[in-house]
Image (tube, rainbow, N blue to C red; front, side):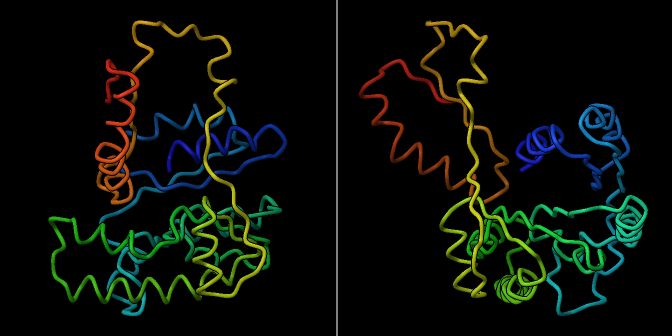
Amino acid sequence: GNIKIYNHIKMLSLEHNIYLLSFIGNGEERKYIPGLEEFCKKVNVVLLRDDSDLLLKNIFLPQIIQCLYSEEFKLTLMKIVDSEKIDLVQIDSIFMALYVNYIGSTPSILIEHDADISSFRKTYIWSNKISNFLFRFVETSKLSIFKIKTYKKFNKVVTLSKRDKGEIERLTGIPDIAVVPPGVDIDFLFSDYNINEQTANNIAFVGYMNHYPNEDAILYFYNQIFNLIKKELADIKLY
């Protein structure tokens, strides 16, 4: 998610003024601001606190949504939208979508990274911290309701796959959902790069392994696909 968002900002900045508002996990992450300022008109960050301003105050909101609510973040967003005369607000991830309620009539886009509720459920199943079945059931149910209501508040919803597009259409009936799949421009990345033949047959899988879809993906690749590749390239290595 982070790499995708970073590259998205870089590309959008070629033709648009970007005002970035983001959480940071700790003060040390402020060192990344100068790098982002190369592509953004202005970068605003808010420290994500452990004690959410909303936590346990709204029993109908999923806990993960409550944990990402910050009064400071909300007020900063409202100030930016008003003072900078923002044309369009883009919110990445349904988990941040609560903030669409604080942008007034400004047009908005939601980039939905994963519309499949089962991914959220399975992430909890594999978690060592949260194992209570009832809690998982309640949180998954609340997230489903939140998604259905929140998708409809955006002027446009963009998914990363046709499957996610179909899932949102099934849940909400929203027409004209856009699909922009992630990809890599090989010609651009390797235009000035000479691949060393001795290391050419290597594969690197990069992903946050606490996120169930990433764990599922690498296990599926290793168990179902990697051996097929090894039949053609005996020296292939997977990192």
